[in-house]
Length: 315
Image 1 (cartoon, helix red, strand yellow):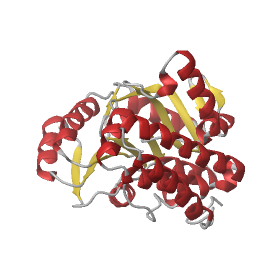
Image 2 (spheres, rainbow, N blue to C red):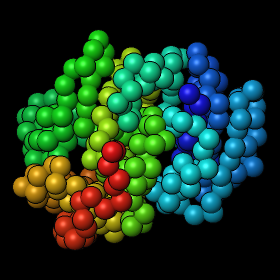
Image 3 (cartoon, rainbow, N blue to C red):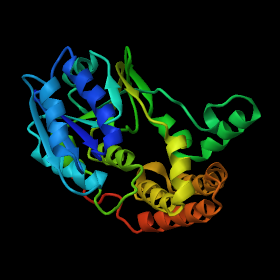
């Protein structure tokens, strides 16, 4: 079983320090990958020097695209990868030493697993749902409108000690190359800002006939502050929320066969309500208008797509 790790990054200076820590954690694995590919928009030479410094004995390649589109970039890297099992990682993760070993053992034990999700721990939990008191309880209750709160828990069931079958994953995951190809890779009908592309890929892996398992012993730490970053971004560029919600709701709507149309609609309504919160956080009321418009646009675009588009089910 050949192992490839693919890391997606913009390559900007502020991401390089995060990438450095990820590469160090890869070098400290009990089972090393055969290949590491960093797919980046820029700073390919600096990234190559970083990787060569940490990953002795591991084939290290940099794919510099010159543009930033997570879906296009990831697909290009996947098609160039040599591995039978491909890890898809964000650049702001830190992996515990047995991360790869635990995932590989899960694939060996469960041949019908198309992807193995890991235990991705957010180091900086943010948002109203993470707070206590009335605000926190209200936010958690409102989140029941989302696909994450209403549908995905139904897919979760125990398989063995520390291993569960789940309905989706984020980019702290490994997939069989065959499963990715049968799922049709990432959907390239979207443009940045992109959100939810990993959920869409996971749903199509399931439609192709594979199980998605989660090994909770394979732990990664996610160093991101989404609310803080989002508030700053939407303060200066409120239209960015329109793009973000347009892609995320689109991905949910195109998978209505799996999720249920009524749940997709309530998810879109939740995003419209959440737009008000982003308007308050960012201090820019235009954010509200853009968020609502993006949710409606994504819903309409997704409903026009064949839910099985690009999927080739297993024989």
